[in-house]
Length: 578
Image 1: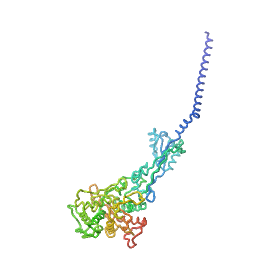
Image 2: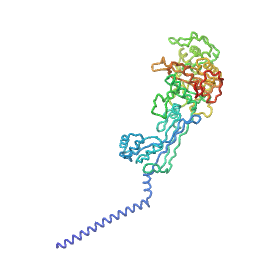
Image 3: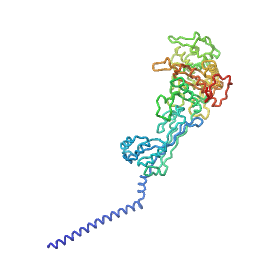
């Protein structure tokens, strides 16, 4: 074959190969165009749901709807605990670039250390959720969102606020950041106050901001409200006076409990020291306890009227019966019971008014320890109050197989046993209302509860007259509440330390009621370890009783009983200088 023919053949083969390549590429290109066209037709005409689902995945989210926690109020509807809407700022680290310069402004607005903030985003880069700042003011959250950083979002939550602050903190308690009760009625009634979260579908923009609510999946159920028995006016009054006496006597602390005589409702319950539940930075465990319920103490001479009730009920004694207290002391082996002085022969009223340990111990020896103990138990001592408050201490009411004489004697004036302030107030409530023991309540009572008679009206009346004498002429003269009559009993007991009784540390107590002829309120005041030189119940606790009871009866519109000249040691009207 000539060279010319070979060259022509090669050119024809090359041209055919190029034509084949062109046709192949064109065919592939047309097939791709056809496939894309078919896919577009398929997605937009045949299978529209796929695109809709993919769009929804990128723009529609399911969000929780936080439930509003129930409001806690006093008996007249004054707010003690409320939940207010706030904002929580959070981030999706998988969407945030830790090197984004806008994070500087975000960190500054939220009060975060920028370096730690960026390091945290890098550390949790695989996560889809971390908190940045929880429960902040909505305006601050808006400032952060306006920065426009991708992956930074905000959502609404609720924050618990306590309008009465430290005044009602031991009763109301507080919640944690997730609004679960931690102390007080917030803890005791957490399930009642807590709501049930809901869910909804929302449409969001590329910054995570909600554009539109689409579908309600499950509505949130708000928590139920709770009306306490507390009267906030009396609570403020009691708190102010207790805080003042603890400060004036440089005392270790104090407690005050006020009960409604005819319903068993707690009208006021305060302690010192206290805490502000709106400021968690100052919380300390020793300030969290509601000492009126959780702390026990020996009630001392405040038990003498109850021992006297047992004596009168026995039929062996009447109010005019006499006891020889000479020579002013009694010996039980190495143990000696003493009076302040030798009172000689005195009647039962003077045993209470002069607070004679010898006199009441002789009565107890005659009656026997079981009789005294039975009376204490019937009035609620050594038993749970049933108030449902977390951490309640029951106390100790001894019941030995055989009573020793010294045990009978000391039990009669409140040693060798322990109670909390609420139990002591309950016992005096029975004396005040004519012998009926009502169940105690921290919740507002709509109907008068059914009580149990544990003491006769006659005995309760006779004991009240003895308590009147304590205030008018006995150890409790400084408990006179201005223009109202009152009755009560002082008590001064040694505090118990790790090594037993502390010789120089006392608890000053006063328990009483007013007006004495038709009691409305019972109040117990206890002050721990006053350091001012005065430490007797009649010196430290009784004046607090006078001021609180005088103010409380006026606030409750109880008509004054006494004329100006009769009102010995009248307590100043709240707001006036006395």
